[in-house]
Amino acid sequence: MKNRIEELRKEKGITQDELAQILEVSRQTISSLENGRYNPSIQLAFKIGKYFGLYIEEIFFPE
Image (cartoon, rainbow, N blue to C red; front, side, top):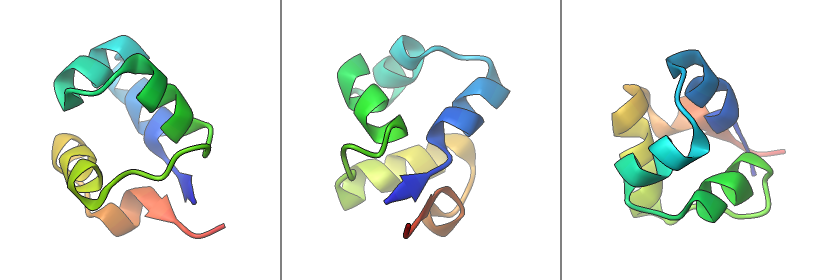
């Protein structure tokens, strides 16, 4: 699944480490999400959406 996490993170001016701390996951998880190697759980997807103030559908989309 493709996503806009890297784009949104950079717009906020935060690092992968900072986003990982905010979402209570590892930096490796953020890296894997950004590279499309990992699809988040629904709980993590909602946390990401809440942090960026967007609906899940605005962040994640099928390839």
